[in-house]
Amino acid sequence: MLLKQSLSLYRFVKITWKIDILMLLLCTLGYLIDTRLLYNVHILPSVAALIGTAIAFFIAFNNNQAYSRWWEARIIWGGIVNDSRSWARSLLSYTKDQVHARRMILRHIGFLYALKSELRKIKDDEYKRYLADGDLPKLEGFSNTANAILDLQSADLQELSDQNKIDGFRFLALNDLIKSFCDGMGKSERINNTVFPTTYVYFTRLFIWILVMLTTMTLSESVGAWSILFAWIIGFVFHTSHINGMSLMNPFEFTPPSIPLNSITRTIEINLLQALREQVIPAPEAPMHGGEYIL
Image 1 (cartoon, rainbow, N blue to C red):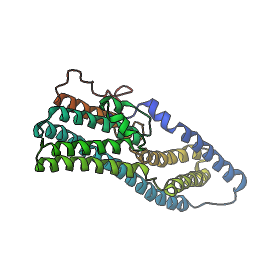
Image 2 (cartoon, rainbow, N blue to C red):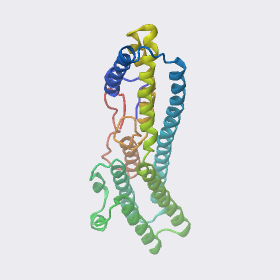
Image 3 (cartoon, one colour):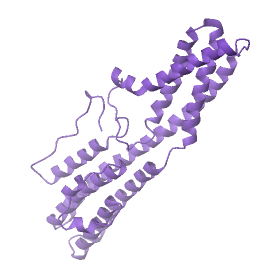
Image 4 (spheres, rainbow, N blue to C red):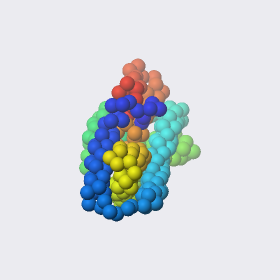
C-alpha cells in the first residue's frame, strides 16, 4: 500500500517510461501521416474531442471498478483483524484448557500466513512455524491449506465442547468466528480469482492510441511539429489515469499499490502473541523504499 501522497521521480519514470516512448512514436507517426500522406485532408477537432469524451467514460468506469475491488479487499481484511483479536480473547477467557487455547491461537496465525501466501500465489512455509507437530500430517493432500487449517480449528473446538471445557453458548460464539474467517477467505478468493474484464482494459488502451494519433493529426495543421508534444501530453494524462486505476485491479498482488497483507498479518501476529504473553515478539512490518509503501 502506498503511504506517501506523492510518488518519487524514480517510481514515476519506472511506471510510465515504456508508454511515454510508445506514445511519442505514435505521435510522430501521426504527424508524418498527416503531413506526408493526408496533407489534403482536414480532420475536424471535434472528432478527437468526441473520442476523448468516450474514453473518459471508459477510464472512469475501469477505475471505479478497480478501486471497488481494492476497497472490498481492504474491508475484508480489516474484518479479519478484528475477528482475530476476538478469537484470541474469547479462547483465553472462555475455555478452561489454556494449553488447548494456546494451540488454537497459534494455529490461527498459521492460518493467516497460509491464506496470505495462497492469495499472493507465493510459496511460503511460514505458516508451519505456528502449527503443532501433529497438525502437519493432517494437512497433507489438501490443495487449500488455509481451509484445511480451519477444519483443524473446528475439530479442536468440538473436542473442547465434548470434554465440557466450554459451554454451548461460548461454543457457538467461537464457531461463528471460524465461520467469519471462512467467509473472509472465500471473499478474498473470489476477488483474487475473478479476472477483470479483459475487453475493458484492451479497448480503453486501443482507444487512447487512436486518440493520440488523431490529436496529433488535428494539431499539426496549426502548430506543426509541436503537435507531437501536445498530443503526447494529452495521451500521457489519459494513460496515466488508466494505469492508476489498473494498479488497484488485483488487490492481493505483491506490488506497492496492493493492500498490505504482510503488514496486516504481522499486526495480527503481534497482537495474538502479546495476548499469549510471549517473550519474543516480531517487529512490525517496516515501510520500504524510503517509507514510500508497505507490503
